[in-house]
Length: 59
Image (cartoon, rainbow, N blue to C red; front, side, top):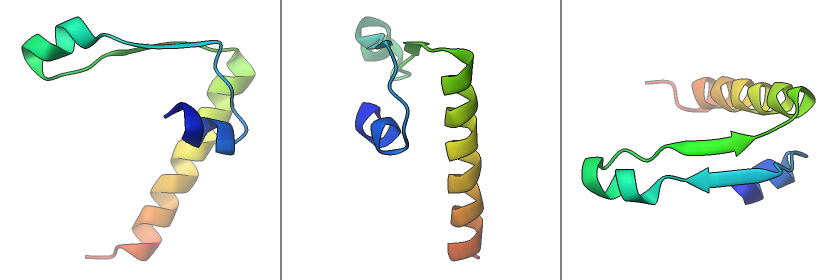
C-alpha cells in the first residue's frame, strides 16, 4: 500500500496494521496518520481507480 501511494505522490508519516486483531478475526485494521492534503490525494486516487475499474471491467 505504501508503494502504491508513493507512486501516486502520497507519503504517509505512519501506516500500521493491527496484525494481532487480524489473526483472530481475519479482518485487518489500518492506522494511518496523514495531513489533510494527503487524505484528499488518497481520495482522489481511489476515485480515479474506481472510475478506471468501471471503464475497463464492464460485466
